[in-house]
Length: 98
Image 1 (cartoon, rainbow, N blue to C red):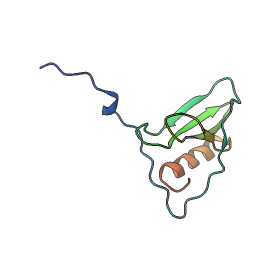
Image 2: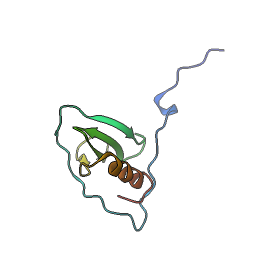
Image 3: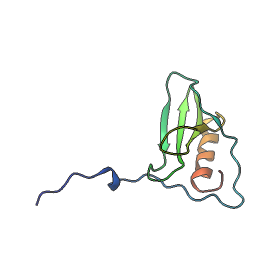
Image 4: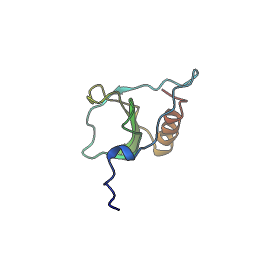
């Protein structure tokens, strides 16, 4: 029996929880290039928006928020240490921060 190749709909990444009523507000700022290279360490699923990415560049980490498919209006959290950014990432994906 021949199997069809998987489509991109067969794979999903992490889905973000809805923000909780007492969610911490993140101070989002417009995204602009600050470093020559950027690495996306983790990302949420592209099937729902907003989509989020945990990024690192120039020795610092931040969370990027992509509001829709047009990729306009991308914002990012303040740049911070790796442990602080991982904490923020967990807060965002669990709905404890928005």
